[in-house]
Amino acid sequence: MPATTARIAVVGSGIIGSWTALHLAEASAQVTLFEQFPLPHTRGSSHGLSRAFRFLGELEMDRLDYSQIRWQELEQLTGEQMFVKTGLMNFGPADDPTLALYMSVLKRTGRSHKWLDSSEIASRYPMTSYPQDWGAAWDPDGGMLIAHRCLNSVQKRFQELRGHIETGRVTSLDSVEAGIRVEVHASASDPVDAAVYDQVVICAGPWTGKLVPQLAPLLQSVATPVTYWHDPSGVYSASSGFPIIFNSRLTGIYGLPSYEYPNLVKILYHGGPETDPDLRDRASLTSHIEKVQHYVTEHLPLLENAGPAILETCMYTMTPDSMPIIDRLDDKVVVGCGFSGSGFKHAPATGWMLAMMALQREQEIPVGFRADRYELHRFQATSVPNG
Image 1: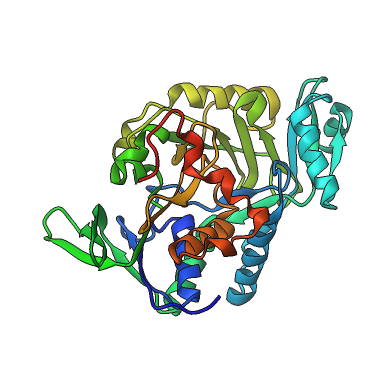
Image 2: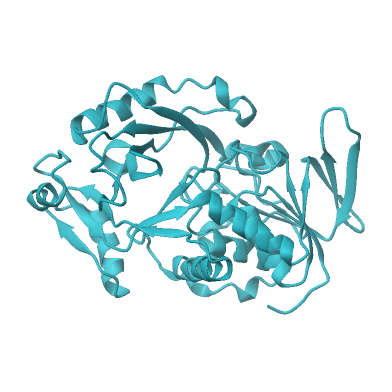
């Protein structure tokens, strides 16, 4: 990547913002990465240990291929494992057109896949109980990214390249003749700090609508329950060969084998109550946890089903079409938001796209990344335009 002398602020040090900052640092930009909470923290969308990495579910592979390469390079650079291969089952009926489409993409791109009928699922995974009319598309190469290790490694590499991380909440962005004036509150009692940058990239997750009010009508912040269920048998673990189960289209549920906590299986509801991210702990998750409990009781009978052993939350930022916004707001501000619970695995590619936009080199984004798919104007019929 050719060098630049641009001064760029990246707002939000989750996995998207951190990869954006790293790409910019690799281009020799002078980058400040702003984070409102002291690191590490659990208040956003990138904390924890595991995130699903699945090939099954993509319509094009270019962004995921690029991201996989960068994750592998990071593993080699740090000497730390970033990915745990488990395989993944995506459930549906045998004539499910969506799964057929996903499997056709894997076939076209030469990736392993297989259809498992109910009898084969029962044979492979006798610790499960699924209906006779459910089968599953099998993605043997799916697995888990070790989330906190990924995030820490990206931020460490960014700092090695002379990137600067500053703790403080960005409260306003104002266009001035010299660029963008960024105001930051380090704390309620400290005075406001301000600096001018050539470009700003906003990766503020569920806080994006507060910082950029014109985007608020397009973004819904939800508190997603992350539940862990005790597995006394140990058969639902990654080490024993249990895969990721992806059942969100039929039931709203997906699950990861026990890995983070010993003998605790991670089951998530894909969604949750709309929540102000600053008031997330007030959200009532009872009805969603009950749905997860019903799923565990019905389909994973060897787990203890009286209730989750651990309950955590994660913030999802949803768009109307569940696809992200990766676009330029004006000639000085770029935004990446609304990843709808599916942004982590793509973060290296997304960060590259945002970095290229901030460097005003959009023409270098590969055609296969389908940047047009994520542009803001797709919502113009029902929302405010860019700017």
